[in-house]
Image (cartoon, rainbow, N blue to C red):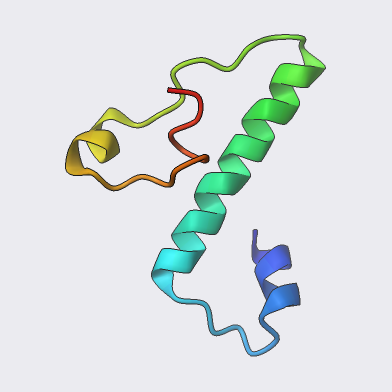
Length: 65
């Protein structure tokens, strides 16, 4: 994540919301990559507390439902 952000933002100025969204999507990349490696299906990867508060990254932490 830090490697990616340092490439797209040379000055290192990335706000907390943007950083959080990148981290959430990176977690899904790792989960889906491992599921492909082990020929498995990721299931129930969302965070219930984030869901209840209404804060989650669509198509990242909340994927699949």
